Image 1 (cartoon, rainbow, N blue to C red):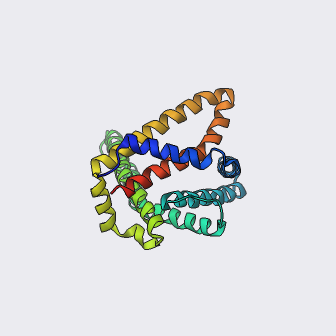
Image 2 (cartoon, helix red, strand yellow):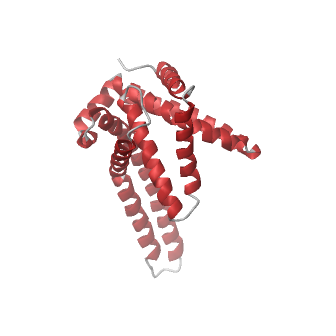
Image 3 (cartoon, helix red, strand yellow):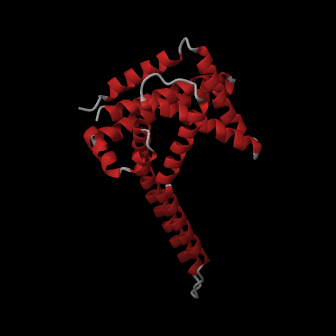
Length: 238
């Protein structure tokens, strides 16, 4: 039987607290990596590269949380490699939504470039373009969500099995989600996203007085560990 949402939230929160509280050096390292990502994104080329490297390292650490046990900040080469592999897995799972976005975008563009003889042709073209654009956004968004929630379990499976190919064993991934329960899995996603959205909204409000930005920076590592353990426990309960 899959773990309850409330129970999962509580246990994963406790795990994140125990992993960081009192282990200030680790927390500071994770904060620095988060800061590099936030600041580096604003600096063209060099900043982007450094930000990407920091992001890969953080992803590698999250893989250790998924894997189980005590996630340690050591063996940075292995952590970096895991981060790269997890990032590649995520990109591969997003290929279909990206292709759909390109197809609908191209269709809307071609429609807008089409010429008609009637005087009211522009109204017709505008209507078709808008229709294709709206349908494309909706379809792409839904498909991206589906592949996104599957990608999460795929990356957790990669972490657990320590094999890149395990992320693409679709039969096993569907079996795991089936044991969790599709409705339960989707609800688990929704609940966590709502909680995080509320937290970020509070940070944004507080950012008007600077302290919100500081709090966001400090608590981002905590939230990353919290969500990673949340999905790891969901996987393990299957």
